[in-house]
Length: 448
Image (cartoon, rainbow, N blue to C red; front, side, top):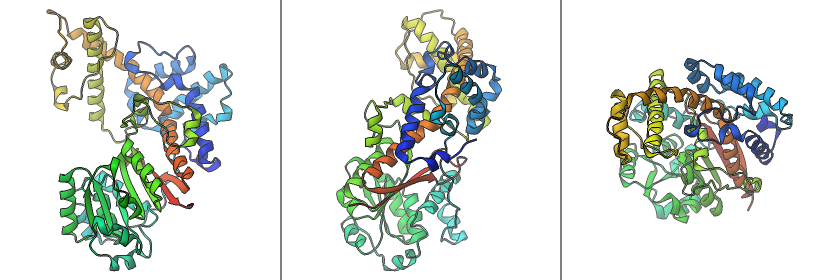
């Protein structure tokens, strides 16, 4: 049922407009703070959907939520019935194709130009799933298997920040954005022979990356610097910029600075859209700005609420933590006599092996909340467990829109690059089982 047809039938700007209409039409289902809800606030306008979601067994909620196709199959008929009853002209928005929107599938994966035995040593210190993401990303890049790579590698020598510009005039070079230890750049340097400049703001990570590169005698150099204020020479001196899962404003900074400098090509896989400095999302493209569509930081987290790799144990712990937080939430509202949410900081997993009473005391201490003497804490655990069922159902319905919302955000980036004179395509670089953040935006400069 999930399909990439929408990407095939519409231009990027047209698809962005259609997704805007869908998200606004169904905004009651996803623009809500679930911890503040005591019922399904949209039930009056979506009675069939409310009936279906209330009938789902608690044990099935996580399984349905983890499978986007099953989620759509479970909720779509009821949603269609409610919209038809309300005489909403949803057909023009292509309800099913937009709710089930997915990226074009990855291109056939080739093999890296590295000996298998050598590759095993090269990847030994990187966790398997992360290594799979890196290799799939590299293999999806247009220049990674380019026939001129070997020829270029024979001519490449030592790189320094000062030599980036001069080298780029005679051979391709790569800028790795928010590099960390430079795993991505190191694989690019190893498999293509191209020089790589890796930008990272933490000196310790730069030092570790430099050590790896020297050990393998690779044409990779590290620059310790701020991604929000990177030297112009990094962009004018590189022909291709890459960023794998750079968060929020970090990858936005690359797009803005790279486009302004007129880089030849940019390849990014966005992540963590909510990690922005502004309180509200600031659209990049003229097309997105024209819609007037607004998003808060909280709403920007919706696309990230998708885990296809969590184990049963992880799900149980997550639900236990959420029930405890909901129980504490009810308690703190009554103790403070104030019906507002009071967020708690992240807890250690080990705290979940203790008691709910210990959790409450920890939360009260962190929020400087004085608990009345003789307060019966145990009853609030049961309240939290009961509220958990409601919150999980609210989240389940909201998650029907997480795909369309993420695609809206991706298309804002695509349209921005097109408006800056780039030819842009977007596709999945790996399967969702490897990472739900599997979008790859590739842009090539075509206009002055």
